[in-house]
Length: 168
Image (tube, rainbow, N blue to C red; front, side, top):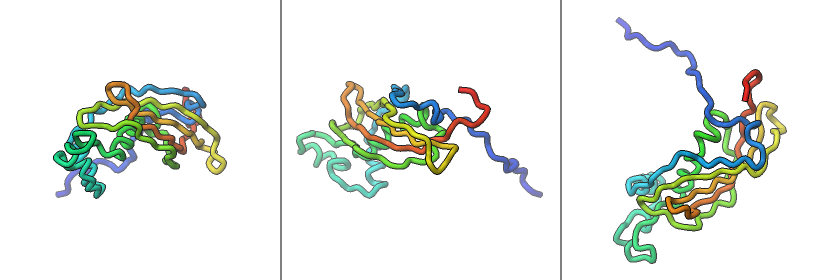
């Protein structure tokens, strides 16, 4: 007797992000999603990426530094800030990240900080090799709960064009 299985048909994917045409230069998005960073987030990310930096993973060591407590791993901060932007910007509409540039961390992030993000399109052009896509350059700025800039990054992404027959 065989176990019934679901048919292997592709699941319909609803794109929640914006199409290339929806991202002209100057588009600014204040993202609704926020994320409070926990100690577990920082420890898990640091250990999974093989980063034994005591400033991130050793509370006693960090207590003796000028910060007085552990700092959140900056690459976790970057990933979180970019992740916050996905739902309202690139969910289902991006083909690939082409690169990141000018990444800065002007202020530390600590356990318990809540991050939010603002994105701005700084450049956009049609793809020269893919007629169904365009390249969009976005600056992502991440802020803590006090409105202090904690991360800024320029990102280039290959974005899908709106499928024929779909309205804006």
